[in-house]
Each structure stands twice: as C-alpha cells, then as structure tokens.
Length: 466
Figure (spheres, rainbow, N blue to C red):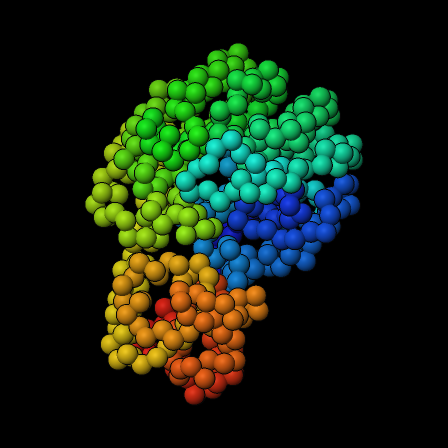
C-alpha cells in the first residue's frame, strides 16, 4: 500500500496493542505511551487502541511525516519490503490463512482510517522484566512489576473467541514469572480461545520446568532467543549454559513431533561477539528444521553496547561483516525467513557504515570551518552517544551542551554544562544540532529565538560547510 508520497507504512497501529505491567502501551516493541491504569474490559482496550496517541501515529504513518517518532528509524520501515508487513507476516509464518477480522483490518488500513471499530487482533503482554540471565547488551531485569492476573481474566471474560487471534507474552523471561505463567494457564483453560494463537518469547532455559504446559497449548508459537553458539552464547548470555539450552531445545523439538501445531522460531541479535557464529547458527537451525531470525542490536542504551554494537560504533571492517553474512546467506538458501533477515541485516549495517563515514566527513569539514571557534551542541541524548567514536567530533571546541529537558539543565555531560537553550548566545554563536528526531523543531526554535545572531550546523544539510 502506497501513500501519496509513494511510501509504504506499517500496519501495527491497525492490528496490535502492547500492554506493559509498568502501565504503558503501544503498537509495537519500539513505542511506549503512558496509561493511568491497566485495562480491564473491552471499553478500556478500545480507548487505548483509539487513543490520541494511536490516532496521531496512524496519521503520521499515512502522511509519511514521522518527525519525532521512533518510526523514523525503524529497521522494518526502512528495509522490510512488505507494506502490510505485520498482518501478512502472521498469515505467512503462523499458517492461519483466514484470520477473523482480515477484511475489516484491510479496509481500515488501505482506506487509511485513523479510528477503527474493531479490537486489536494481537494483544501482547509485557508481564515483567525479571530474568534468569544478565545478557551483556540488555538493559532489562530492572523493573519487576507483575501483570495483574485478575485484570487479564476479566479481559478474557469480556471477549468472544472470534475477536482476538493472537495472545503474546513477553518478559524479561516469560517462563520465570508467575504472572505470565498464570495468564498462559488461564488462557489455555478457556475453551473460547482454543483456536487463538499463543505466542511466547523465552530464552528457552526453563522449557523443561514447564514442558507439560507448553505441550498442552493447542496453537503455540514459541520464540526462543539465542545469541551466538557454544562459547559465544555463554559469553553473551551471562548465567546461561549452552548444554542446558540444547537440552531444553531438544525437549520442545520432541514435543513438536507429537503436536504439529507447535511453531518454533529462533531469534538472534547479531553483535560483535556473535558475528563469527552466523553460519554455524544457520547450520544448527537448518539441521533441526527451525526457522531462525536475525536482528541487529537496537540502540535503546548505546552506553551498554559500546563493545558490541558495530552498527553504531566502528568496531569491524565492512569486509569482515560481508564475509560472515555472505557465508550465512549461502547456507540459508532454502530458509526464506532466515535469508530475508540476513538481507535486511546487511542493508542495515551498510547504511550505518555509510552514515559513520558521512559523520567523519561532516565533522572534519566543520572543524576546518570553525577554526577552533566555540560551539554549543544542542542535545545530550543517544544521538550524541553515537558520535563519541568520531574523532573529529571531539576536535571541536565544545563549550556547553544545550537541552530543553529541565531535568538535565545544570548537570554535566562529558564534563560540560548542560544549559537552557535560551542561554546559548552567552556561550557561543555556533550551534550544532545533535538530534535526528527533532532536528527541524530545534532549528525552528533557534531561528525564531536568535534569528541571524548564530550559525546553525546540522548533519542533514552541509551547504553551510561549503
């Protein structure tokens, strides 16, 4: 489906509602909005699904005006070719050709409705962040809120069997948390939803403990997270044992032989410590007839990923990356899900590599242009963190950082004061905008506030460096 600007847009806000025990909601794992209370009935679900946040997001996607939205840098939006990706992926991978509200959703999506009159077909529950592992790149395992079972059961009572196709449960470690286990058991014992798909994300290490429950689920989709193989697995997944992982995986493979409705997918984040294992992982999955999906590290906390995230940091050469990816792609020639994820991974990496080279070129020219004149950097968030390994960035005579966040003002960032943007002129007449999502908004503020009193530099426009 094309918009007027000839761009495809994501269908998640028309199909999915994610609910978090931390009292947040959203259409996918990259977007969180705050809610006052956990929904307990149809009405409160629809209030979220047609909330001002969802309506605004649908408008942004339809118009392709994504400034200020996490969608701006979404890997699926940029590199996945399916316009109707989420809904079609469910039909394709889960093998359920006639999802209950297919025509309704297609009409709402293709006719660009911003308000819908049907419940989300995919209800996903983030039950708790508690986990039995401490993976080197992960920032979870901090909050431990439990999703209230009474509210979940009340939702089940409210809905009919034809209204929800997919129930998803995500942690932390889903099989560690009693709230998620109780929710899964309650759903499994409710005959109304015997045809619904039950999607569980797990690290697999507790499969043995809950094998009888998993075997009893009529339409199980088990997503097993595994990063690396053997020694690299144990390095990344701190507290995990490869032998233990294999033992648990074999148990669910045996269960799959009996219950053909069990669908398995291995999901792996590709990082510095696991890149050399890609081909081994593809071979491993292929031998066991399991689909394997690769994804990059997402930069929700770059500081925790500085030694692993070669998409954002200059840790490897393009040749080394291509050598490992191409070998894995050759092995995955008859594994369409795996092959497609490797293709996306390759495109994503090279776009990031090209971006880093552009950063280097930009800051080299900016340094020459400034000739050591003082400059204020507007922004002190993750975008700046991406620039920390660009040598020419620190060659600038940075005298302060500006940020509109009142909580940050007055504090230090990289040993420089974070100031109110209205005080920039007291420090310098040169400003670099270090924000991708809010660049235009910041530039408008600077132009309105200072007019021609300052020079503005930004990565998306190099004209003022010529």
